[in-house]
Length: 132
Ligand SMILES: Nc1ncnc2c1ncn2[C@@H]1O[C@H](COP(=O)(O)OP(=O)(O)O)[C@@H](O)[C@H]1O
Ligand SMILES: [Mg+2]
Image: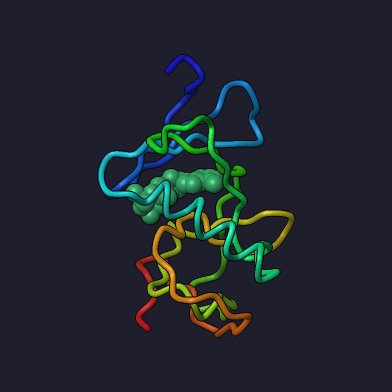
């Protein structure tokens, strides 16, 4: 995969790299599960509900869901304990799964989500993860 640049991050299901042809995007390479296909599906569903602004947009690269592209977000940095607003429909909240786009907090890992609604909730930002 010659279009992959430096590794940016890794979770249980995907390894994420710079996308060399366009630095505004990252390439998410599947390790396990069906999270890439789910993310593509969820983004379409969110857009249809006018909620696309809550996540970093993603798109297919080719037919193969083993690699998808997502708009590259900046690291989200808040003070420990600061209150931030997140969508109610994501089942868990870990700072690693969020980033900043145009000054807004967006989800960058949304392979799992509940039915989308516009409802938000305030949570305390904790580097070690939020307890709901
Ligand atoms: N759109 C993005 N912009 C910047 N970094 C990202 C983006 N998507 C993922 N990453 C980085 O890669 C890591 C793993 O991606 P993630 O989607 O959370 O994979 P997994 O489903 O395996 O948890 C993230 O924690 C983050 O550091
Ligand atoms: Mg993750």
